[in-house]
Structure formats: C-alpha cells, structure tokens
Amino acid sequence: MLDNKKIYQSTEEFNTWAYGKGLRFEEKYLINNYLDKHLKTVEAGTAGGRILLEMRKMGFTSLIGYDYVPEFIEQAKQKDPSSEITFEVEDATQLSYVNNSFAQILYLQQIISSIDGDQAKLKAFQEAYRILEPGGTALFSFLCFEVRAQTLIYKPYLVYLRILRSLQGKSLSLQYLPWLKLGEKWNFSALLDCEPYVYWYKPQEVERLLKTVGFEVTAVGSSAQIEGDSMCTSVEELARQPLAGGLYFVCTK
Image 1 (tube, one colour):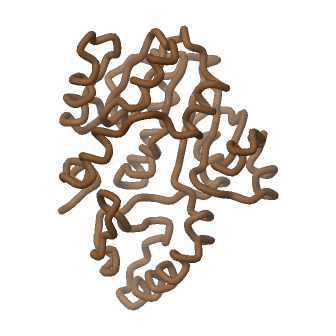
Image 2 (cartoon, one colour):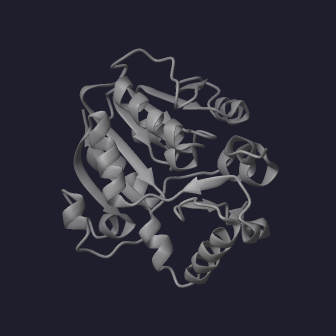
C-alpha cells in the first residue's frame, strides 16, 4: 500500500522537498513577527532543512529539525557541514523529546495535513503541545479546504470526486484528497481517487483541535491576511475576510 511516507521518498517529491531553497513570504513573515532568535526552536517535518538553514542566516542560534524520512535528514546534514543545526529522524506522532523541551516549535510545511489517519493527526497535535514549554510559541500551517473548494480549476474535480465516492459507496470526507500533483506534474491517478490522501483543513476545525489539546490561538490567517499584514485574532474574524493560499495559526501554551 502506498502511503505518504513512500510518496516523499519517491524521486518526484523527494527532489522537491530535499533541495528547496529560501523562505516563502508567509514563512518569513511569521518567523520575523512571532519568534525570538535566541530561544530553543524545533521544526517538524524539516525535509531538506530549507527553513532552518535560512533561519540560521537570520541569526537564530539554537535550532533542531526532525523528519520521519531518513533520506531527508541525510540531505539536511550535508547542507550543514558545521553541524550548527541538529537534524534528527523522528516521527511527529511519537517524539522522543521530553516534555517542555522547546520554547518555539514550527509546523510550517503542512506536516499534519500529510499524516495518515485521524488518530495519528490528533496524536501529532498532542505531541506538539507536549514538547512546547509553558509560555512557548507554536507556528502551524495547513492546507485550506475552503481555498481549494473555491478555486475555479478544482471545483469540477471536487464535484466529480463526490459523485465517484458516492457510486463506490465510499464515505470518505472530501477534505481527504489524493495528491493532485507529484513533483509539480499532474498526478492522473487522482482521477481514480487513488491513495494516499492529504487532508485539507477548515479554519474552525483547526481551532477546535488546537484548543482541545491545550493550545491558545493568538493569531490566525491565510496567505491573504499575511500579505496584507492583517492577521486575525480569531477564526470568527477570519470568517468575514477573503481567504487565499495556506492557513496559518500562531499559538501559545
């Protein structure tokens, strides 16, 4: 059975995630506005270390990154010959770090959206809370279902997928979508609704999950709010504004 871990180990996706460079606008905004360069920080799903390598250039001094794909960690280590950053193989659903290990945690590459299974996703939220110290800051990003559902090019596909699943007697939520692209190329097996899936979250759903495990949400927005330097203080406020791109939450413990 093909799962998301195997997808990341495939040539197409591995190259995309292992060799990326630079920070996206949203990532740079969140890091500059919500993180302290001198506090101990961990990034979940670091892949080839793209974000942490840029953070080091920005002056961050205590950085750790983990990923469940060993080949990603090997690539990240090769890019950091001085070993100033600690790169480790870890699973977001069962971390070896002790409680309250980090002052800052980054889940900025939609890592939770690609974890297989509802219970495993919940466990990843719980583990993120556990390793963050009281008063610490957490940054999360998620694939946003509303943005996908409102995009003209994807609307017909979602209608098609709903009909296909109904005919097949499959009760799977439309928020579970097959990989529509692999290595920046269209994945035509998505027309057959082939696994694995990535999960596209709704803002209210993310807020509920974060609060369930103990986080306090301090800011929320999509790429549209970040580009306008106007992050919202609640999901209710965000619901009155247009959405674009990814979904971002800033939390404290």
